[in-house]
Image 1 (cartoon, rainbow, N blue to C red):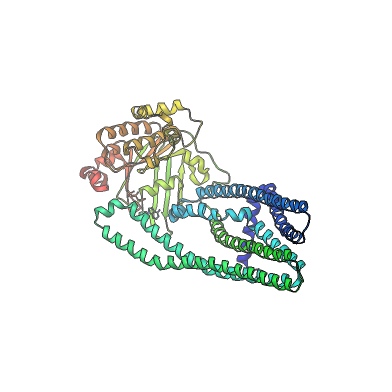
Image 2: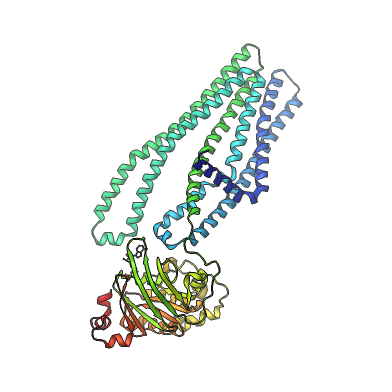
Length: 586
Ligand SMILES: Nc1ncnc2c1ncn2[C@@H]1O[C@H](COP(=O)(O)OP(=O)(O)OP(=O)(O)O)[C@@H](O)[C@H]1O
């Protein structure tokens, strides 16, 4: 067996063992139900044959009634078993796919930021939801259904043989040929369906992008270009879609035609054998009924093989995703960070996002506990990257970063992210209650502490204006909140987490004077008793800094005590103060 095939088989069995293993009782029930359905289906034609032959032979009415009742009873049992089997299968599939989804979400959350930057959220949703969805039938029934349908076909052929060897032989060959032809046709249809889905993804991807950028498109007068692209995409989609629809229809028509041929064969054989006085009229109907019944498992096998094919592609992509491992992990014997304000030290740190273009070059600086560092530099100079390295969102290629004298790679990631709080310009708020947004679902934080913090940061009036206080649901992405309010909520989060180091990426957009004052006061409270690094865009904020560091192209252009640099007329910092920060750094 080739290697790739072995891995695929391993993954199939691993998946089945991991996600179906714990549900073996329900799986046994499904197998039992499918086998009973099979038996009911095989017994019914016998009752029909008996009924017809007894009627034509002028048999006893009460036996006929009994046969009729037995037929109806078995049909009802068959329906009942089918309903129960569908119910249990759906449950099995739902449980298994949800477990797999949860495992994939947890896995993705553990992966490096670099992975998330190179994979769009749409792609991950497709992996976690779309691909897993395709696995649902595979999990619940594919194997059992294929097996039970093969058994049903064999059973039907066997009882047809029992009628007459010729019928068994012809119908056996017919079943094999029909399955083969249907699978071949299906392959053609799948190719055009895939092309159609590709075009559809292109079209909707384009539409999504355009709708997200509506305001920019209108402002820049690009509407006619968008419409032109719209028509171009639709025009190239049309023939592909028409072909897919035709192929889909031809599969349907061919299926009906093949089954029609099967039925005609059954009638012809029945008529011939009856004319030769080899079988009874009941047996003619029996042959016809069994042939008709044969269509169902053939079609079902075709469908299940198609499901397995779809599941195979999904499994391969899931396997690749699970194979991707985070490179940033906990230290084997982690050290704890000290409590209180944390000292920060960078020793010859260099970093690049892509291993080629260095973004930070040989960065070295120290910040004593409780001190504030003002980080300045033009856009793209590496300020945010420096902050990301401190949180170990990325790993420096060389050099060492220490917090409270502990190398950050020697701590646990959870401790590190508890010890360092970061407020970015782009505050992420979730569609959840105010409480959950502030505590990140940490139920051990009492409401009284949240309320006190909100009050002290000047958000008391805002909270009282909410209809349900802390229970009020926020809109997704902070809908309905001003930029200032969102910033203050982010400050509240940091207060509640109480880290020893705060990194503040100050909003570069202007706020109204009242909000700015609130933020100023909140910043003072936030920095008290903590070490802080502020990526500053405003003069007011810079005045809080004890030290200043100016970055340019990932190198330290200047660093020192703020007062010294401000008093040095030749320093870059004093030049920035004279020219105005906003103009130079924005
Ligand atoms: N995820 C990323 N992948 C690749 N390159 C990146 C990534 N993020 C930033 N960069 C590059 O790294 C360099 C430094 O970016 P960084 O965001 O640290 O600058 P910055 O000083 O914070 O800028 P700004 O003030 O605009 O936020 C830039 O050239 C940027 O293009």
